[in-house]
Length: 66
Image 1 (spheres, one colour):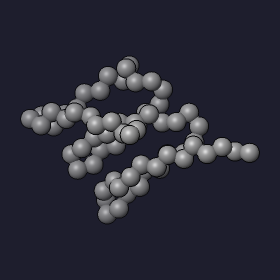
Image 2 (cartoon, rainbow, N blue to C red):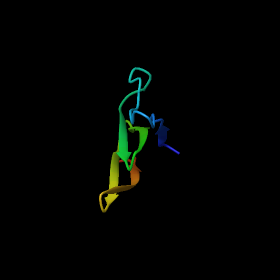
Image 3 (tube, rainbow, N blue to C red):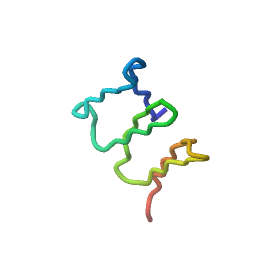
């Protein structure tokens, strides 16, 4: 699974992320009090699909050009 859960402190509703630990480009998706982090591919397209204001899926398209 590419998406990694990010711990959110329930008492303060805050999250801490050390951006220096992350490699390359990454994205954080937040929905319904849940946060997830994933690395972005070097080449390709990443789509965040929503439905009725909620994130349903994250699609990765790393196809090759000929």
